[in-house]
Image (cartoon, rainbow, N blue to C red; front, side):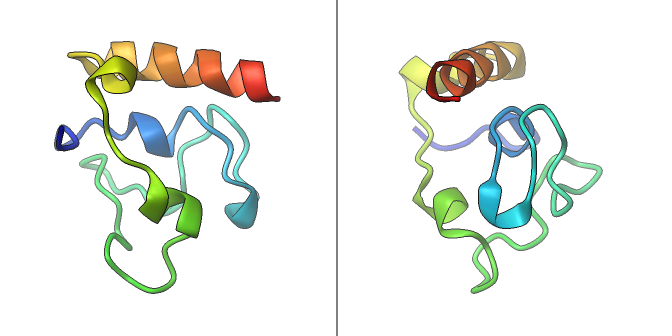
Length: 77
């Protein structure tokens, strides 16, 4: 599965420790179109580069992706 353009759930819901980003906060690199401004660049955190969209995780809507990622974040906190 490819990411849905403009979803951005993976850049909002989880914490990203290398960026000091807390769960539920928009990543500073997420632009107004919910696209990563540093996608494909060396400064992109490894955790972000390693993330792979999957139907079981992303569902069919941004809200499903947010709900699933928030649930997983709470389970691993």
